[in-house]
Image (cartoon, rainbow, N blue to C red; front, side, top):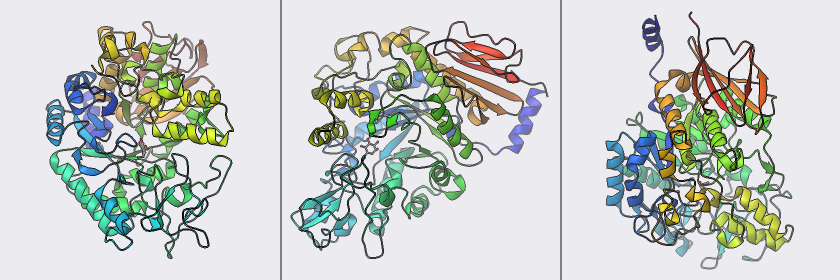
Length: 589
Ligand code: GLC
């Protein structure tokens, strides 16, 4: 009976892409493992851990930028797209890593940062050198606002603020004009309107694919098209308490008028003919579900999936990223549920809690104290059971926590440091308030070194780590996690294996249940005659929920994070603190 059903299914369904069965692991090399003792992680450190990645079971690695870079934004400021920074190793070392991963059946995605380069990229050096340099138009150069003295406050071509605080325009005395940088002044934005720029980028991408990489994670890829008017001017943005004194650049720079055209062109020029085995994932801050569908609908030939930012913005208050407010679980369900529904028939979700820009999820939506193991595994269960491709950020599989830094001098991240400088300048927040904001939301929370073992510096380096190791490494580390069958690490292994094996996890429909429950996250996944019921308790107390009709007798446990899973009784179930439960109901029809 079962095998006949499977045969029928196979015939009616086109084979799903490999990444519907895959889990991707992000390596932020600087904090992963250091092999040369300079306190900064490197490619040899990644190579040393390939068996660890294979043991975890991941299918692909996304490698954050290791290209040549002045490291103003830890490598997201690239000065040579086709070489490796000596901090991290050599091109030969990268080839070795790709080969070692491929031997273990693991693909490698490069981070593609093409909204901007470093100001030390030769393209920008030429562009800046004179107003009539052939590369002048590769970046966004504009004169001062009409009637204003160039270089004086308020004379910037638009009122845009940079995402790293301060104005988004840098005055350059060499030619008396300004260049645009949505991020730091050392990250000038490339001008994608110029077809020569686009051709140079596509050629570079083909070069990487020819070298053997399996795809790209595309940094702020929905920022590449700016809303430029026919006369070359760019629109001011609205000024709010939050962005003041600067205007919000969003409307003029995010999901701009030509973004889909550019991505379709990229697809034709770079991926056509060799695309099937690849994975293309876009980072798209500010993208709505509707945008997400446009980017990821395969018929449009753009990307395979995008990272939404909506669910990681729900615990921000009116003051923005560093104004932390507690999450209301109902908002999380509404947001992720909307993305599941919106990409149900076409497109695909990239699923994530953590990355190098986000605080650690167990500290953020879980409890990194008494319930660390339970809440880390519950959060993992909820994420990995959604329809989409899950991403695991280094250390997440160990239940690593936020840094809990208590002084300014612990911080290294440019965004955090700029925020401190700006907040102090404005004088609106006390130092304690600023520190509390950083403790909750700083990107450095994710950037403390991976905790490998209980030896000094968590086994990350024999030197002085570039950022402090979290002192909890003596308890939380890979060696201890691997030795304990009940650990967060082994639970992630089981979740990854489950996605590999179970077609319902890969392709089943998603239905949200109990949308108004403040503590329990519940949904079903359904494929043919099989239904999975997924429950997660986002609280430290017992929760009893009624799920008549979904809790049929005979449900079989698929995975749970308590040794003795909760038992449904008469259509209801009591889940314990941070408990996760996945049940399978197979109907005989
Ligand atoms: C992306 C990266 C982030 C970086 C920014 C500028 O958001 O993930 O780390 O600072 O783009 O490149």
